[in-house]
Length: 392
Ligand SMILES: C[S@@+](CC[C@H](N)C(=O)[O-])C[C@H]1O[C@@H](n2cnc3c(N)ncnc32)[C@H](O)[C@@H]1O
Image (cartoon, rainbow, N blue to C red; front, side, top):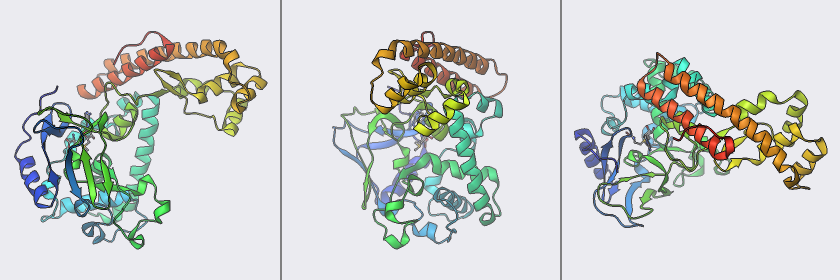
């Protein structure tokens, strides 16, 4: 069990403020954890089913909060951009009502090393394929938000907007405005998407993530966290941010888990370049193009379909994807093709890990995390039958 270190004065002050705002904390406290920043520790032995925290809806920051609405951000700004712009304004404001909370967050400097978005180009290039795809989507989203928000934030730099944007990215909870009248919703209730449903939750944002953590729950009264099992005093209590791969956690939150039951990789980087144009159009038509997920349990149905198209007569592929045949008769041949692909993947993993280790640039922490990520991928490939590879 990692030691829970004293949180420091700013966090003690924040907890008093949070309590004065009506946030209820029961048997838990913030603490520092090496490698994870702040987190939540059990302040006494806790039983399964005990409610640890209640964060009243009125204390959440969403685009419906009075403090945000007062800025009248135009509706062409995404919800993410509006919250980031709001935070920038709060930092500019001497009398910000949220200063005690803001002081508890990681600094701009912390994010420089933690978040792949801020890493150097060479390290970014050495991210695994799925992480690279997530990162380029993230960069595009940030650039779009900055273009829309910049005219409203004349005294801010892109670098500080990025910091505020990442604070929103790493600290928001899903909130579909259960307490908000229809007229004030960002769009019709039935059309709300995950990109509309952001809220920052004071105190709740101290919880670190584990794949087997407590499930935060919300209703119109606010957010609660209840223990998923018994805890001993001094243990860190995690919540689950959702079932996410380590590539997703790395890009969106700046860390990876080991082990992570939800971790997978994809075979896209190996499989896609080997597809002839005719196979690409067939797979696109049939909805089987790309996202060839690999877990330690093996390759997904989409991969099975693509390999069948590549290596079997067309009628055997059609029988498989139409469900007329379960494909068992061809399985040995497809497994052999998959093994060849996995062996090639192990070589990619080894090369990438060596390249990261040999880099003369980039911080030690970043390089260690990236090497560890490649080794985790090696372990997934090995679990799926690809031999070689190192454990996480
Ligand atoms: C909601 S905040 C949690 C509190 C945060 N640790 C802090 O210092 O304020 C989410 C961030 O915490 C860190 N984090 C969460 N879970 C983690 C874990 N299991 N291991 C390492 N870092 C973690 C990541 O930096 C992530 O972006």
